[in-house]
Image 1: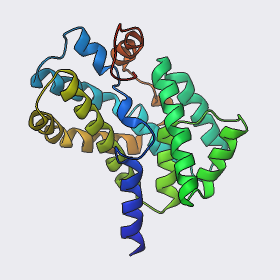
Image 2 (image 1 turned 90 degrees about the vertical axis):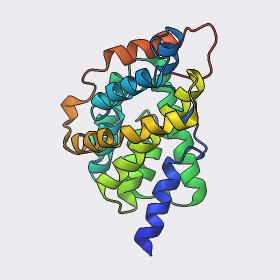
Image 3 (image 1 turned 60 degrees about the vertical axis):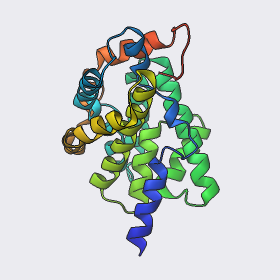
Length: 228
């Protein structure tokens, strides 16, 4: 039963209702819609395909390395510093910081903040690390004995699901159309997970320039529903 219970704990960690504010991020999607570059199911699908092409070299890859560095504290600190450097858009960077802090506090309140994840929290409180959500997710998955591929798949799905849910509200589109987009990108997510499992630290931050620029522009929209 332990494996089944850990699977449930991991699912809870990436659930949209877990109180860390992940559902408030649009990853630049709102600016794309404001510029009328996304206004149909086809264009939302194109956005998702583009996002998946770089996902392994951003948060998905960061989560993978966080998992793999569970017993390598020096590399965890280096990964934290690199993540801080490659997140050029302020709201994306700060948003990940806040989600990490809320996530760690929630895990602490539940009594399962252990091992490297607890150490990471101590480094953040001592200002030796900044704290990023995907690193914390990777460390938590490792701490409860999950397989890397399972952790990345569940985490990746949660990110795509949040994008779709935000997209159908912004465009707007029907919930059914949104679910069609999510369904059509399952193969893309599987490919991104495989890529993330092999990613090297020097590959982090590759590409994604357009997404970064739209996230930055999003910070200055006249009216907004989400953070970048």
